[in-house]
Each structure stands twice: as C-alpha cells, then as structure tokens.
Amino acid sequence: MQIQWYPGHMARAKRLLKDQLSRVDVVLEMCDARLPAASRNPDLEAMCSRKPRVLVLNKADLAEESVTRAWIAHFAQRGIAGIPFIAARGRPKDVLGAIERAVAASVARQAERGVRKTVRALVAGVPNVGKSTLINCLRGQAITKTGDRPGVTRANQWVRASPYLELLDTPGLLWPRFDDANMARKLAFIGTIRDEIMDQERLSEQLLEELLALRPKAAAERFRLSKPYGQGQALLQNACVGRGWLLTGGVADTARGAALVLDEFRAGKLGRISLERPPKRTEDTKEESGDG
Image (cartoon, rainbow, N blue to C red; front, side, top):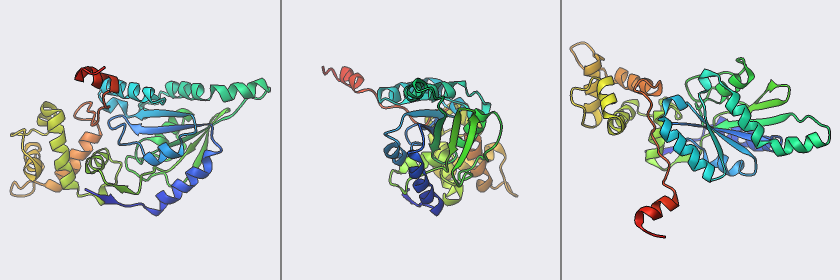
C-alpha cells in the first residue's frame, strides 16, 4: 500500500509552521499512544529538533498501560520528555507541568531581569491526534474546532490558555508519501489517513486480522466470530453474520460492517490495544545474545 498524496493545505501548513518556530519557546508534539512511533511525523522531528519538546501520548486510555510506560522510557532515553494523556477527559495538570519544566531555564533568565515571561507553545502532530482537544482542555473551555476525523484544523490559530501561556494550534501534518505499507495501514486504522482515500472494506479486513493476532479473544467476542481465524473477505463476512450486519436474503453487508469494525476499534470498544511496541534497548539485546 504505497500512498502518495500531499494536499495543498498540508504543504501550506508546513510552511506556516516553519515560519512560526522562531516565535515559540516549546513544542508540544502529539502522537497517538496506540502507535507512538508511526504517528510521529519525521518532518516535525527535523524541524523542531532545536526547540525544547514535550511529547504528548494522547488517547492513552485506548492503549495498553504497560506498553505506554515502555514507550515513555524509550523516548526518555533519547532526551524527549513524554507523558501519557487523555485529552477528552480534560486533566491538564501533567501537560502544564511538563511545559514548565521544558521552559524553566528561559523563564528563570527573564525573571532575573524582572520580567514575567509569557510562554508560547506550538502544538503540532499528525491529523486526528487530538491537538485542538488538548488546547481546549488547557484553556478550560472550547475555543478551537474539534472532530473525530482528520483535517478539521486548516490554519494556524493562537489561543491564550492563561495570562502567561499562549498556544498555537496547527493543522495536522503528514509527510508526502508512505512507502512503508505496514505503517500506512496502521495510521489508517486509527483514522490519521482519511477513510475516503482508502479501500474501507480491505482496511477493515486487515484490521480484523491484526486484532485476531493481538487480542484473539476480545476480537472473537466483540464481532461474534463463529470461526475466529481466517483472512480477508471471509473474515469480514464472518463478522457481519455474527453481528447481524446483513442485507435482504441474509447477505453480509460488508460496506456497513467495514465502517463499524473501524469505528468500534477507534472508540476502544475492544478494550485497550497497542498496535506498536518500542524496540528493545541496545544493552538488553546484547545481554540476550551474551555479548558484553
């Protein structure tokens, strides 16, 4: 699955983001806790490398807690502060604390001059990861548009979260081409890539295969699979029959079934599932191999 696309608004968003970087003190990069590596745009990594960063692993309630902890340790080894977060539940204290720690030195320098610094934070990430929801949470009221589909935010928007904190909401930013089929597929599972450009039935079939590999009991129970194995179209049809998603004559309604399989996974109705695990540390690999 090689996806080549780069909507005009995304190219424009990348230029605007570059222009704003010199004006901000810290970057809040958001990713999806179920897919912490694949949902990070490598372009952001390059553009923001000179700025203090806080990596917010949003939708942590949908990911396995132990796996999220392992990811946070993995990022910490690389000098990136990561925190789990559930933007939809509106508990901003951890994020605000992480921002304070990231900008402590520059705030202290201004304080020595008798100035109370207003911190400016840029909120960035791939589409549909919860940037606007986070901003509304930090501000304490809804001011930016939110939605459960990618592409809701189309332009940069400054928001004053408190007298001394300003946030810049930016459009979701993807990279121009996906060469890694596995990465593209998993990004589509969580709704980062618009459903309209994907084959929804094929995508749902692949998701069912993935869920049976990761959580066979939960997938079999949720979709009432009479045969909790198999692949492709037969697996989707099995789910349609099990859940009663049928057309006249008892024919499987695979179009409806595909949409519901994706929706139910994205809503966490199969429980907490992480689609990605951090790589093992180099020293751990050496110990296992007997080296060192």
